Image 1: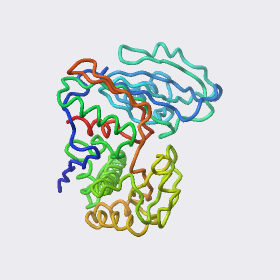
Image 2: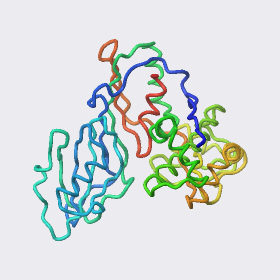
Image 3: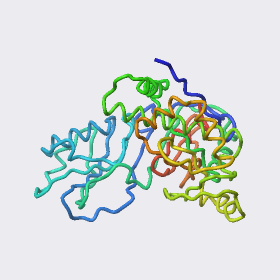
Length: 339
């Protein structure tokens, strides 16, 4: 199996200005899901807001199915959350014609049910407006003034919307296994989905890295397709006009990069040339995605920081609080300031 090495993606704000440890304790990485809608209060699906500590999402879902005496497929969640963290996320349990069990009996030292409400439809993957984070960096050392300067720039200008390292597995093994799968290796259905996602994310990061290197990850170039902020809607422009330049500067829209697969390019001119150069250099991954019937999509190259706040609790402890839209990674923020 060919080993794909995940590069050190180019930085937007210079080299990290400090070092430190994240997740020394689960309480150092606190994440809260924000739903994109309000549960109606009536229906066959029980929506549960659960705080978990040291447990992964799929484990909680299995335990919920067992506790409620339903099939595993009757339990849904909007997204996967880290295990070594304190995370608050939503689950739904399909209970047609049934009353809610006593959810307090489901609680344990590592699981708390914060809220329960009914809704007419099950919870679907990705139906989040975003995630709110509170992170503690311990044993921090470095240039405090430069770190604050970088954080101020991030607050104003946003970050490069890289997929996080967890997407690629330990030492990039998920991308390597995707390549092996494309070359004929047999894998299970769940692994197949993970490897396809890793390959697609890897190609996107390479496209974004090239635009960071060219200093146009947040600037318009000929043939770009733009995405509206906090939306999946896009539009293409052959040449940037004054209105596009204004809206980009206001962070109302963002340039996009390809999530590779079947379908039209949706870019042209200079934007197409950049994307095609990356795809041509990684033809086996690109063709493997097409052969596996993955459809092409677009992802914003830039993401705005919402409510970014920070404080040095002491000389060796940095606290960060911020909200990111669904699909963006806290590690993309951290990598700009610490190693």
